[in-house]
Length: 133
Image (cartoon, rainbow, N blue to C red; front, top):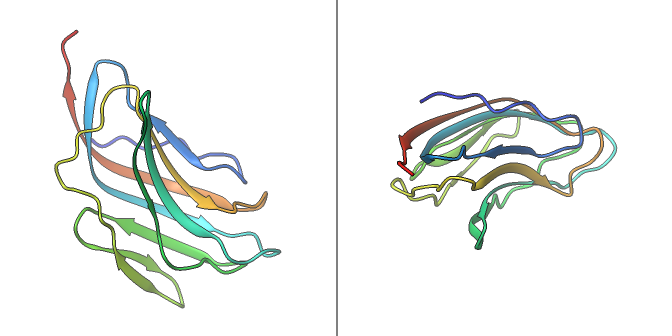
């Protein structure tokens, strides 16, 4: 299932809630991140949380500079790629067969997000499974 995540307002992290009655597997994630020109040093994170707390959290080890535009591609067990003039890569330690339960909240965000930061063109590749009630 291919399902775009709604672009958040500037200064907000991107959030997707797994619909009731479904279980998902996140296969890949693509997004563009533009950082505010006034403040440097933000890091990218992915968090999956549910009613019992945080199931998964990963913060990328490299910094986003002020006034930078990066297009990121994330997929389990491969290097996280952020295309820009100062490209970097790091393995995204997300298990390939990790079920994300109904009601869980998937957040793609920036630690230290600023009012002018923008996360856009967010496109995940999700496999869905209907869960009978």
